[in-house]
Image (tube, rainbow, N blue to C red):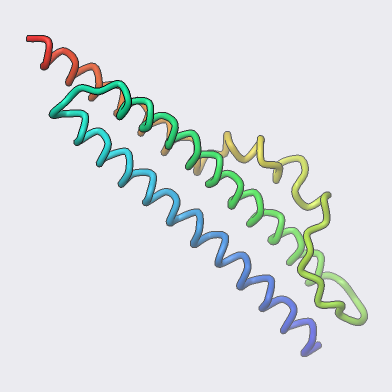
Length: 137
């Protein structure tokens, strides 16, 4: 039983790291988007706008990846928790753990990820249109 508890602790540590990575990516996304929009406020430049949207897609994809991995490790946790017998201490994800609802492409549309990046994209679009209108006057 002690081995099983230790194995579950290892898996829980991985889940915590994935959660932390996802949180950091969300913070970096907001920071970089804000900084690039602030730079484009003074000098309306298509390069800044392109970088804003490119970075949003990159961060969105990375965030979905980490959330997908986290869900996979949660499934592994449940499997190890309910498993009887000797513990093998394997931390490798079974492909079945990251399929279906836990897959990367399903996670892209997750309710914890999609609104953040959608709102950032809409705010960026509104500010870009505002800056363009303001500079054209």
